[in-house]
Image 1 (cartoon, each protein chain N blue to C red):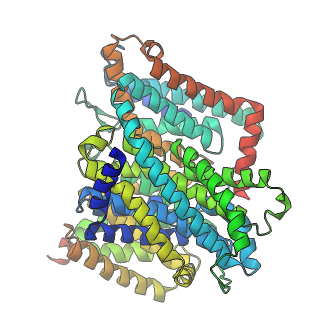
Image 2 (cartoon, each protein chain N blue to C red):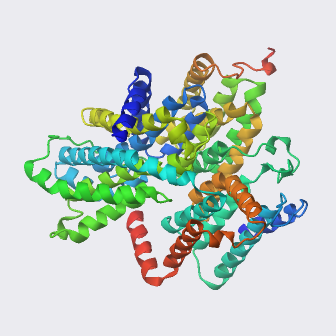
Amino acid sequence: MELLANLATGFEAALTLTNLAYCLIGVTLGTLVGVLPGLGPIATISILLPITFTLPPVSSLIMLAGIYYGAQYGGSTTAILINLPGEATAVATTLDGHAMAKQGRAGAALAAAAIGSFFAGTVATFLLAAFAPPLAELALKFGPHEYFSLMVLGLLASVVLAHGSLLRAIGMILLGLLLGLIGTDVNSGMQRFTFGLPELADGISFVIVAMGVFGLGEIIRNLEHEETRSLVIKRVGGLMPTREDFRRMVAPILRGTAIGSVLGILPGNGALLGSFTAYSVEKKISRTPERFGKGAIEGVAAPESANNAGAQTSFIPMLTLGIPSSPVMALMIGALIIQGIQPGPTVVTDQPALFWGIIVSMWVGNLFLIILNLPMIGLWVRLVTVPYHLLYPAILVFCAIGVYSLNNQPFDVLLMAVFGLLGYLFAKLECEPAPLMLGFILGPMMEEYLRRALVLSRGDATTFLTRPISAAMLALALIAVFLVLVPAFRKTREQAFQEEEQ
Amino acid sequence: MFFAVGVLAVLVARDYPLGSALRMGPAYFPTVLGVLLTLVGAATMVRGVTQPGTALGRFAWRDLLLILSSTVLFSILIRNAGLVAAVVTIVVVGAYASTRFRWGYALLLAFGLAAFCALLFIKALGLPIPMIGPWFGH
């Protein structure tokens, strides 16, 4: 069994004392930012990114990954207890989770969320272990044509799965691609779009963009709607769900895991989409749909399983193809690049300890999360009461120092302020920043692959259509865009996102 | 907005050799993107004129200015005045944006964070940031 041997390699890498410690730090931080509204995994990972430079690659990736899926856990806690989703992915959980809490069954709801998440995490870990290596092998056969088409597909699919205007999202992608081209052209050594500023010659680090748009932009937006959060501390009550609860939970957890795993692989925010889809599926197939929204345990178990499964399977395209499916994955790629590892299909064969170590650490991390979350729930709840006016100056400081420490360049901090302004503008114009981020990361890669592909084909652009895999991916991209334009699908898409906004 | 950036990108890219599809010059890809972005911008404007949309929300100018200027101040201070002064400034100016600003807690927070950052980033992680900058005679 090759799989078992590989997993053994992973356990060896993940179970060293240091890596266990970093895993624990990661999931603890993740739970923390998941619980604290206004601070998300994107900002946290960007702040910590410069620090990870001093760590070995496995430890740094294990910690960063822990932050991401840990945040999915933490978000559900506040969703259930105070009807306030710490993370966008926990919005679906508020519907029934908080209703259960009001009935004095908060303990059962929290347990359902934790058990569902743990099960989903375990399944997703195995999926990752089983499917990533063959996919990476396939990807090794990809030429520049296939990569270019794959990126087109990825970018367009992220637009379809994001909410808001399609046109604006495409505009944001293009803007991101252009921003990514700032700096010295690799082939000719020519400086592009630098406006004569030497500081821009190496391009803009994506950490600056991420911190500006997601960190600063978010702070300004939150300050605009500053309000006090009141905490209704309820007794959490018995943690053990009843036998009846268990019976009701099993099928939704299985379905939620399946839905979340599939949607997690797709570009866009898979974990977010998964939790909503899982919730509406449960409601549709339930024999008693009227119970939903009034404290149905199925309505907690399914979306929580889905968001955790999605958070983990979204690592598949990142680890095997080197292509990020979400801003968080883009940051992970950045973390690998900082360590001098070029993400892509060769990671599996060249860095087996890293690859399998990350996978195994996710399972270990899920175990930590259950231990952290259930008994210590009271502590996490108290953290929600940290007022925002004490929290955001700290975020501001960490953003500034984080960006400065990248290159010890005060100019980078100025640049972050510019992107903070842009981030706020985007929010005002209702433009989603995530597609911009994806375009920004993919811009230089896309140009490179386009160039190579056209050199190979001697300038013949039809080469993308004559190679079967490449043509199939472009066709899929086209279908995805047309789907949005078809009225029927458009309606359901809008509905799905409307539910989310409520 | 997209329209303007798109046009700008095409114009700037015109300074670079375009090259052919076979031997792509540095301007090829940006020009293609710029043209596409211009088209998207134009389409957005057409839709903006023909379809009734929601007006832009009010801008939180005060918050925006305070947060951005605190960041700008930080970038000026960090190298010249050192970490402590930069952190204290960014926290106080930044915190001033909140409607619940009080001098007492803001100063407390500022010095607390400054001490914490000095310990974490300079002592523990050894980042090359001056604690007290050359402006104070070091």
